[in-house]
Length: 368
Ligand SMILES: Cc1ncc(COP(=O)(O)O)c(C=O)c1O
Image (tube, rainbow, N blue to C red; front, side, top):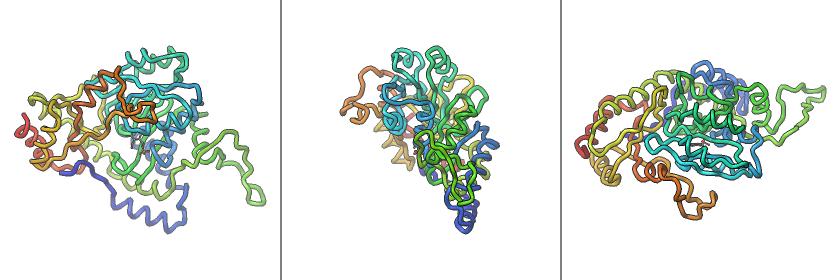
């Protein structure tokens, strides 16, 4: 049983070959088609395709004018990119605690971390489980804050029936190698607002309006009014993504049914705690995370039965770059508990029924 699965469909190979032969190797028609498919198939609101999830997060922070003097609240339980994107803008990272039963930001603790410099909150839908967006949006509204959802793990998740990617003003997705849908590398920023959408399309390519007319000399006259970036997705990556969109609904459904299978089969197993899924949350199951006492024994018991179990992301607050200087913050008890007990088991869509039975059997025999 493999922990991750990198899905490259035959259609991806065919489409990449076509893109290469066409000469459209930078941003061209495949990127536009990929954006249309993301909206049509997954309900994402005005996705702007970029070359990584990190680029999508950084672009959102730039669009929201987050910079020096601003504080941005994030969970420590995430991948480094959530925090480094904030530092890239010159803003300060402030860690808020998570609910140890979900792995997601605890809105009450977010509220406690607010200062007059707080400008934004980046909730991370950890492992694909949506955060309590109503509570976070209410805090943002009361305090005039921006919300940027880090949905790198959450393609296909829904919050109260609404696809993640259509819930708030900015949502960043990742199409990196081991995500639900891969482009090789890639990302998308959803900006439901008209102005942000147009601006995101400019800033992903140096701040240049690619729809501006070209003059008789072949030159595109364009006034760059804000520093832009080289963040556009190219047609080779978009072709990989488009090929992988074919059959994606079935693969996503398989992931979700794998997750639900584990929840049924592992409920009540001694020494294993399932995460809490509140009503209205539709998990995208990028990870299936359990909370386990004696974690190392658990990993060894599973390994002996051919089943990998991993800690995919550990808390990031001890890193020097976040002023941790090797020490974890001591005021994040929910993060402490989650960090010490979390362990993930394989949940991807290529697992067979036999694989699932092997995973459950290994946990029951080796552990329960
Ligand atoms: C929570 C989270 N945010 C952001 C990213 C960055 O995405 P990318 O690797 O596409 O830049 C990742 C991971 O890969 C992630 O796990």
